[in-house]
Length: 69
Image (tube, rainbow, N blue to C red; front, side):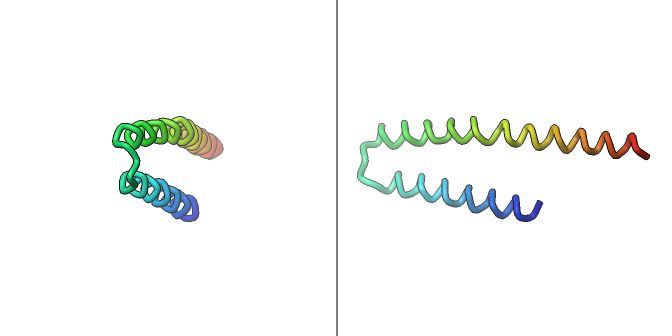
């Protein structure tokens, strides 16, 4: 669990750093906004189902462990 949190923190730091670099660049404002929104939507599509499956699995494991007792 600790390794997962460290990896998630590292990933979050890299993504936020990339967004800061994008917003500090000389690109047009509307392009920065579009790229940020596209990236946020893509990460949501990737991470939300993975988090949901992890929570589902945890709940089923706990239920299985309780029924064995």
